[in-house]
Length: 376
View 1 (cartoon, helix red, strand yellow):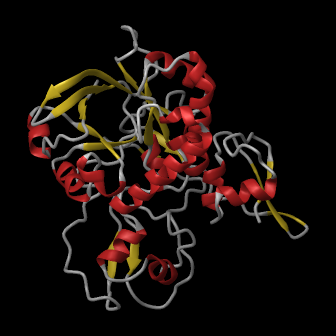
View 2: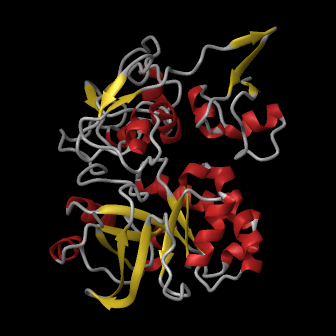
View 3: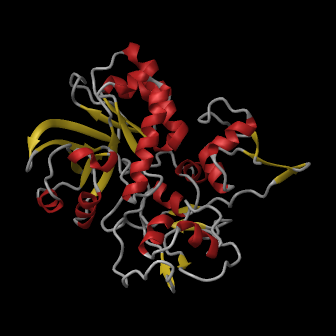
């Protein structure tokens, strides 16, 4: 069933008004410190989420910026990630990058390179694209994005099959100029559900250096946001909780706020395990919770459409990071179907750039099942 939503730049309809009008999600711009009002800022984010609205993220420096190719895609993905971190959004939030003009076939090579540049920073599984039906079709064929947001503009009445969002009317009014959108798939790159990125009520944070007790992770938390709330650092929390990768924590995890370092801990064991889907789950959300990616879950469960799972469905979970295969002093990993370089890097507490470098991989978005990667 399609869900209705809005996108806007300078308007501020307000979460309560948006909800009352029957809309369930908003698409908002990522810009440094809100860029004087066009971009999403912390107060607007809290208002939207507290009113139960889903958030979708878009980045657009200017309408035709993808024409500039790979280097610009890299820079825009880096800027997007800085804003995601600053706002306390989940670090693996998808981002739609905008091709906001009547792009022609001759523009596609530059658009693809722009998207590859973005993917080299945040991973192709997080890269989305906004544009016309023809741009959607060409980009899908070239496999340079994962999420697709089509505008009716320049589409000449055609709606591309397989898109996630459709912007069907511009320049409407809801306490300012807004555009109307609807979903085509259940998973459309939304990064929050009601209350998931707003801190649960808790005791006032102790003064810096005096954090004590424990904290239970809720959906949307990051280690740095928890650390800031309790006057400490994410490095300190990682140390005392034995967390190898501070970007990977999971819902329900109990964190010590002070004390000596324990033996290393991590997400729930997934070796030979399973998960039963509940209402509101998405495959990508389950994957994030268990330290994997939705492609892997789809592959091992024979799911042809990762946007369609249902309550009560039992999802097989993959084993954890495979123990290092020793080749002399060299650890290796054999790529499986659905793996991405960034996901493998996360499993082993390194970066995809490091894996790319030591394995001589020209394009970090192109690895293949059976490929043996050096780990470090």
